[in-house]
Structure formats: C-alpha cells, structure tokens
Image (cartoon, rainbow, N blue to C red; front, side, top):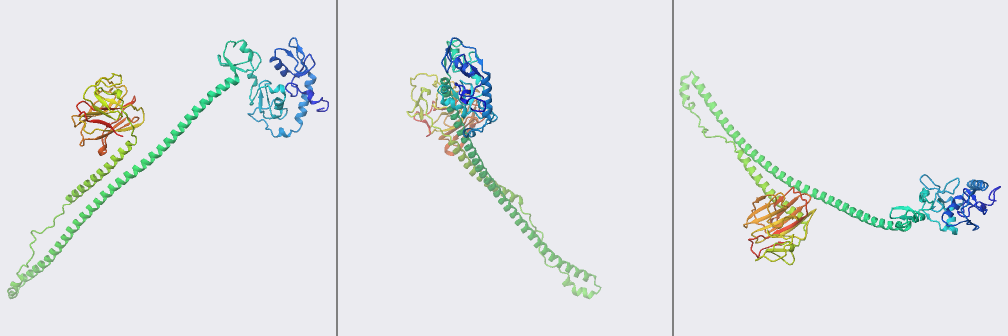
Length: 544
C-alpha cells in the first residue's frame, strides 16, 4: 500500500501518461485511464480501442467517471505532497513568479523543464521521466516550457497544430489539410520553422554586419574627433605663438620708443637745467654790480664817487643769450619711425606665417587626393586621350567616333570615369604650355551637346584660361581673376557637403579661387578641356 487504506501506487497511475490519475474514467472493458489521455489517444486514432487490453469498440463509448478512483488518487497526491522531497527533487528549482510550473506537482510546485504538445502539460525533471522512458510517451513532442498549451490545439478539430499553411500563413492540424486547407501549400511546423530560422540566420548575419559597420564607423568618427581635437589644439597653439610673437615684437618696439623718447626728454631737460644754472650765475654777478652802482650813486662823498667811478661803472662781460634756446625734440618723428618699423616687422611676420599657412592648407587638402582616369567615350571628337587615361590634348583633325549620349560633341571636353556624390576629393593637373583650357567639376546631367554656358542651372564649376593670361572662374556667371603668377600645376579640391570647390596654384601653394556655399544635388565628375587654340603638343596631364 502506498498509504494507509490506499491500493498500490501503480494501480493509481494512468498507463498512458504514467502519472497519478487526473479525472479517471472507466472504459467498457473495465480499464481505467485519465479522461484527457484516452480522449487524446482516440483523437489521434482511426479506431476506438483500449490502449491496455486492445479491446476495440464499434463506436466511441460514453466514458463514466470513476469517483472512487478519483478520490483515492486525490488522497495519494495529498499524501505524496507531505512526503520529503527526494534528492533529485531537492536539487530542482522551485517555480517562482514568471516561471512555468510543473502541472503534475502537488503542493510545492517545481519549475517545468519541458512541455508536451500531446499531453498539453508541462513537467519538472521528476515528472518528465515517463516521457523519456516509456515507449508510448517517447513519441510525444516535447519542447521548452511554454504557457497556454491549449492555444497549440486546433480549436475546430481538437488536434495539435502540427502544420503551417503557407497560403493562409496560419497554423493547422492534420484534419485542416483535408478540409479547409485541402488545396493549400503547407509544411510541418519543424520544416517551416527551420526555413524561417535560416532566414533569421541570414537576417542576423546582415544585422551583425550592419552592427560591425556602424561600430567601425563609430570608431572612425571617434578617431576623426581625436584628430580634429589634435588639429584644433595644434593650430590654436601655433596661432597663440604667432600672436604672442607679434605682441612681443610690438611691445619691444613700444619699449624702445618710450626709452628713446625718455632719453631725448632727459637730455633736453639736463641742457635746460645747465643753461638756467649758467644764467643764474650771471644774474648774481649782475646783481652784485648793480648793488655796487646803486651804493656809489647814493654816496654824498664826492671825492669817493670820483675815485671809485672807473671801477664801479663797468658792465661785466657776459654771454650773448639772444641765440641760445633749447629745442623740443621731434617726438612725432620718433613715433612715426617706430610705427613704420613695427609695420614692416609685422608685414614680414605676416608674410612668413601666411606662407606657412598656405603650405599647410595645401598639404591638408592633398590628403584627399584621388586617382583619376579619363573616360575616352565622353571625349570630344577633336580630343585625343592617352592610352593610360592620364592625358588629353587637342588633335589635328576631328575623329570619326560614335556620337554617344555621354560624349561632349560639340563644345569640347572629357570627364573622368570616377564620380563623387559625397565627402572630399582632390586632384592635380599639369597645365604647362597651355594657352587655353577649362578645368573643374560638372554634373552628370550637364548638356554635352552644346558649349558650356553660364547659368543658374548650368551644373559646372570651372577655372578657365583664355588668350594665355586671361583667367576666369565660371559657374552661374563669370568672375575675372587677376593672377600675378602663371600656374604650371593646378590643384582642385571639393568638399561635397560644405559646397566648396577650390583651385590652387600648387607651385606657390596659393589659393586661386573658391566657389563657396554651393548646393550640390548630383554626382560630380572631374572635367577637362584643352580647348581649341592650344598647341596640339600641349596636354592636360592628371598628376600622379
């Protein structure tokens, strides 16, 4: 006896699920089974028979609940709930909030490890053992614990949803395929799920690649940020040093000016003091002579007056002060001279620092240098493109070539094979001995069947040379340029996002002209035109 007054435990277990009876029913043959187990068994079978004694019934019998067996099974469950957990059970986790619990545990509910789609129940490790050991239960479909197992049963035929209808994109049971989904395309859930997993794996690979690309871009941006900070700090330090030096030079000039003014002022002051002292001495002598004259003239002693007259009536020999003066120094001239020297020094410093900045700017844009190759299929019939695609010159005659839509004919010109729709790029062109040329960038949609003219919709940003020394910047309108130096090599820099197109005289690191605040709406193609009138031997050569 499993417990006082109860039959052996194996007599209280269902022979299908191997668990203690739940709602036991008695078949006409006398065998007892769980109601859910026998109904499920018959739902998956064409004939109604007892799975224990194999007795077959003509029709599905009316199942009678076995109340006595049900009460004994309930008592056994209560008795087992009071028993101490086995060592295996003690190692299992107790179901907590959010966990799926075992449906067979009574009392303390353990965490389920599997769910059965046939039994529509979830089991802990202990109650799962019959499904792993019993021949009939091994065929049941197990999966990781899930909630709401009833939702995995067909609501129309009370059978497991084992198939996936691709036509209606829904789950079906075996009977559905014979009725509502008869002509539809369907697969077992496992096959459809595996195909979806394959798609998901591809999606995961794509997502991982996108993640890596963005992480790489983040790393690049962080690196760019560091470079930007370093460049900003470096240039700020250079600027600070330049202006500190300028300030120091100005301060030195000011100190020298003030010192010279002070020297002039002190020298004049000392001269004045010396002259005043000398005049004071003479005043004393004259005052003494005046006093002697006054005393003698006031004397009543006629004989004394006559005897002393010759010695007293003499005016002392004195310096002629009529032409003596102290000139105020020309302080204005000193200030002017100091200012001229300061300006000259500043200009020399500015020229030196400007040259450094120009050279640094050119080196900066040269970092974005790209490798260009001319596209001969776009070249005007009068133009000859070298085999390596790096040179173009004016030919002696017009070639017979297919008039392709992308060919410049007439009007002259050729574009590179490469185009740019974002970022920055730079290239150089040798223009030695050229008397006429056009260099720049153009839209892909530019009209290639007529000469390039200036208009708001022209789609070109070009530096032009005419008559050997007339330079113009051409876009929506022409801008005459005054160049003091004839460029031999021209660099062209474009910042697509900033709307900037700049031309440089590479030989002297001088900016020739910049188109600013451009709004680009298409890809840009580097454009070259040696122009009619140039010597046939002169070529535009793309720098390496």
